[in-house]
Image (cartoon, rainbow, N blue to C red):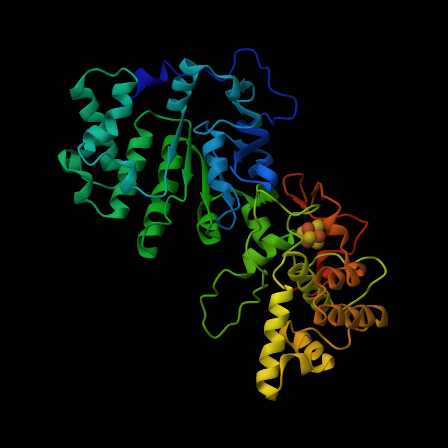
Length: 460
Ligand code: SF4
């Protein structure tokens, strides 16, 4: 395909290299401290509490590689994708192109030219096409916008691209509704390639497709990347997709990157407890084998009010115990979850009354006659709390907490359990090197010498 007319107009890397100090030589795209906050429009006493969708993210994408960004839904990865290519304006932080070009400072004209160098592919191929435009026109629309006037030349390019993505040139005059989801995603790839970009950012490129079609499209992306010398950034919630096509992977949790490194190393020498939980939840193909799934409690917390310290501490199975405790880890996690239910208003005076009424009904007595010790035992069972924890201090605090709860004093019950407070709630972990090279980093207190390693605790 002759795309020379575009090549001549691309800005070359830099004549004089003014790379920002910590950006590696081979990075084509870099973000530093990127933030995207949204106005939630609601807050205490009318104040607005920002939703911190992306909160201080830094990484590089090296020329020719595929970087995957993975995380549960709601972790901020799609907002990151849109903010990093300025489809949404960042709240703070910087984006650099080819080491020294500050994308956040681009004016409209430069931004328009840059949009030819970096393309985006979206999850739902159906919504990314104008139903009134033929496939050929859709593919070449960006070329027309960029100034390629000869329609015969545009058509030639579209036919060539259709064949390269495994379609027929004869499809050029057909309309989007005539194609399946997988075919539309192939056409979306052809459209992204039409302007001969240096990099493509693909947000969940195969998640709307049948599993059988997914690997075909992933194979195509892989092949075209090599053929066109492309750099890719793939955003996905699916670790299987990431493992299949990415050279490196960044794991996101609640607006932050918690682990980043070469894909195979992250999968086989996983460092962060969140990544361990995600990796352990990948289905095992052999139904007779049991995966060692690590359970994550609850949903991703509200990004307008993220947990203090390590943001993962409210769900982390490896959460650090205070130095004076040495409980069985599952027991500790269960007690912390109970404390969280008290402080977050999930267990309330009303819910305790509900338990009391149920007991009264079972015993055929008036709720006010339910013996306090029966209510305490029922509350203990409801949350699957142990009678003995191995620590007389914790046993006694738990007894006192349940007694306060039975009297309807939820806040006092939470106070009784303050001895369980984890250092993970007050200390935000820094990224530390965890691999053999400085390419693999993760942010967890257990990866520092101040705390026992993740391996020292049994995760469930
Ligand atoms: S610092 Fe590490 S151990 Fe503590 S909550 Fe975070 S991920 Fe878990």
